[in-house]
Image (tube, rainbow, N blue to C red; front, top):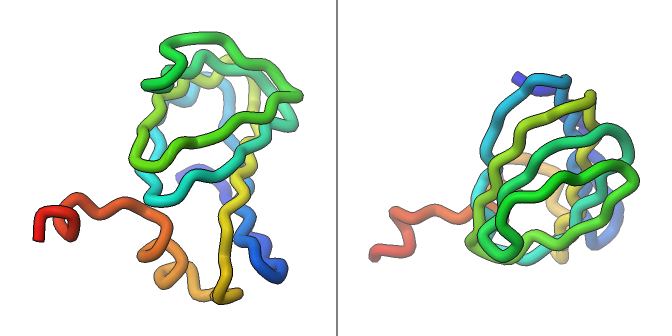
Length: 108
């Protein structure tokens, strides 16, 4: 598991992930568009809207709703996402149930 730090401020849930060099991963699929910021490191990233490219900190991007990205971490990376949290919820299971796309629910 990758170390994750959670921050809660009024109106936002902020998630910071440390990813060591050599890590290969795919993102979760989110229901809501949100921003992300890379404050350290570099990676090769593949996103449906942009294809494959290299990114190096500092870098700011937008995750479109219902998209998935793949990453190959080249240098230790700190990847931070900023999610709207209008209810100011702090229970991570409840937050994820509103932010993470669940294809099983989409079929009903």
